[in-house]
Figure 1: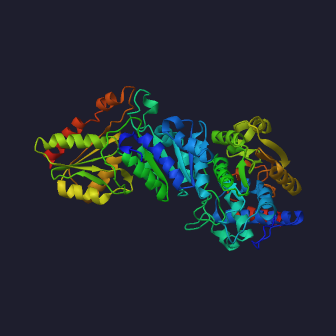
Figure 2: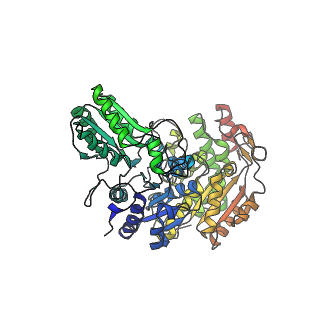
Length: 314
Length: 280
């Protein structure tokens, strides 16, 4: 059995795709000359007849994926998140989202932890774009275990998915035996003073922050909101009602992603003080992943400060 | 072509096909006039090609639009939806009377094709340049499933400005795909004017040849030539065929022929009357 806890999200994706390929004969995989980075090459090595190398034709790839799905196949289309979202957004919109086709876009190298490659390769708009598409399911797993489970769920559930993975290894926040439920947040830690809602790499930082706050007498709930769409509104409303303050953390622009979506629910159902950890309205630069997280304020310390701020406003 | 067991036979003779094409053109005029908007020019230029496919060449069953072994027609130039709707209605996918609902609220016949609504429509289109790629997906699925259906993708000539067309053009021969045929409705006009003035395409046939396609050039209004080209495309093994069909935009209606104004404009009631008389 694969030890997914030890794996980066993209490595977990590559491995689980091979497992799923055995189980689902209708799965086909498409990649755009990045299969050794997205790890779809494992599937390609195992099932060459069901692996389609599209070259650097991301637009072509997404429309081909639509045609496959229209013919009863379960296509997984992979490339880097910047290209999956920005390069071929119209193809995803017209050939996948509008006809509600069963295509799974699994993008790696999400966010700024891509690192040294710089702004062109930092996917900071992808969640906003995919969340804007009616009917799309949008998932950001927090670690290798959750990635494997989310990809299995995407294969089993009919409908378009965007799953955003990272380049580096994320610290494990889940344990073996974890079960992924689409659209259902995971309470990783309960608390009554405030709630931290996070996705992806920021989940482990939210837990770190909660630990630090606990030692100072503040008791925080931590929700792993792995599914941005459909959003677990009841978990958000419960958090607002029961803890009275919310901080949202994500490796994405402050607008259009998890924070915006959570805020929409909170303002409508149960307004409470909120703060947001994310990338300001700027394009980020080259650097090591940790340096970039630090420079852009995506740290446990920043979450901790934000929680203190919202608690005071209660 | 007749498919045993389906009970449906589309095997019209050339004179019957020509008559059917006129009938479809009349539907196009009436539909667009009733809707008050739409794209008559590119629907009329494609009428003979679409007629040849639906009433002679393709294997399909209107009673079973999801039949896995059906040949697929992918309308990449989604604005020509009226000619496709006319062909689908006359083949029996839905009642001919429904054509009058084109572009109206709650209609199954959207301004540009929507596969979730209209029986027989394979692709939701409208943003140009994507149909060949989409058809490739269907064609690859067919090969995987060892089904012998064929895919026909109709593109506009203006549409060939889109870069994605050439991504797909590179892909299909690389994969030696011989179950897909592209047809370019080369009517020489696009929305803003003459193709040669807006964005030069020539030498179009050489471009496709350079991408390793089997290229055929025909008069896209000559039913015999259309059928011959489709047959040659089907017989070609190991590479895809593109049929460059030289057509006249607005074909069949004198004041629409070669008139760029009728790319996306409905005829007035008086023009409609004249057009229908000419197509009688």
